[in-house]
Length: 166
Image 1 (cartoon, one colour):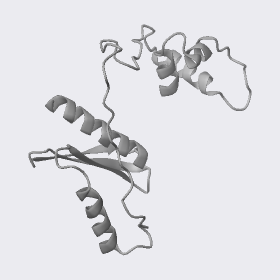
Image 2 (image 1 turned 90 degrees about the vertical axis):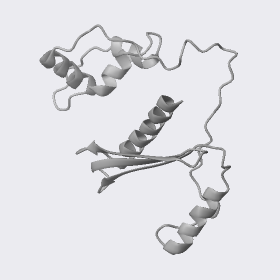
Image 3 (image 1 turned 45 degrees about the horizontal axis):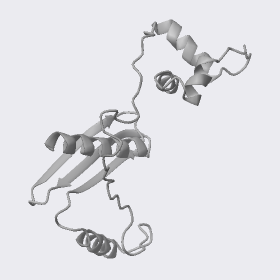
């Protein structure tokens, strides 16, 4: 249902939107398609048809405006195994990696995790500003949240916090 709604909010020239708009039911006997289920749920819950389109980029930014891309680093400076490595060596390698980053940067550290990878997820965010002040955020993501979703929520919360500060 979420996927179908997202596609319906896309631009009319988007291939997924065209696929959703031109879909016709096939009348399968055994297994229902995603579109069959979405249609059934729409009829059952009477969802509104006046959807707001999703903007994938900001139209207010002029085309000649230079965009700065965040420098995201996900690897340590030395190859280390979490499963087979000594925890102290891993911690020292992590600290060496952090020390290579310039001090005038805003440092953002995120972590999202869930019990058994799929339930009771949550996230944590630590933001360290150049003036050495720190800010920490944490929140539960819900009963049915995966590691991946929790990490995505952490990144989203960090970006939202930084945009509210600046």
